[in-house]
Amino acid sequence: MKYLYKKNGFTLVEVLVAISILGILFTFLSKTINTTKKLNQPYIQKASKIYDESKIFKILVKDFSQVVGKSSVIYGKKYDIVRIQTKNTIYNIVDPYVTYFVSKKDLALIRTESLEKYDLYKKEDIYKEYIFGDILSNNTKSFKVFYKNDFFNIMLRAKDMNPIVLKLQKVQ
Image 1 (cartoon, rainbow, N blue to C red):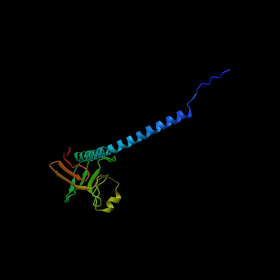
Image 2: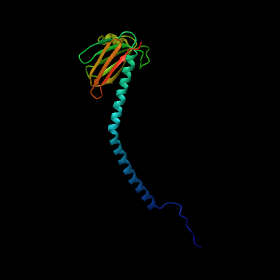
Image 3: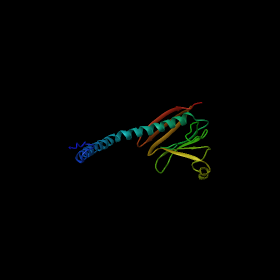
Image 4: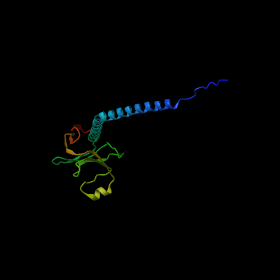
């Protein structure tokens, strides 16, 4: 009597050949993915830069177009200090007091938002208040604001971004 054996699986050689082919394919695939990441890096950096610039632009437009009451500007050679009360808020404060200034240490343009007015030069004022701060740009070359006839003229120049120049009318 003859026994007929049915082949139910793969042989060891077939499995090893399949694993070798998959290993070669994954090697080429990983090299292709790494090359694509390197080639896309400049585009990712450019997109990030454009996103950051548009974010700063939107904050400036919203803050200065929705000013409530008086605004004050302390003029400097390169950097102005601006204090406004605006309807725009990032931290859910009703009609916050917003101050823009450039730090001396790292030349960062800083936007602070608080519930009450405070003086930058008096430490006791700063310690009493809840002040929220954001760095808008680093390596700021100049930040100038001129207010005349209900128009704010704003110019911001920083090392790693395109200049932002705005002329905004104060909304009544």
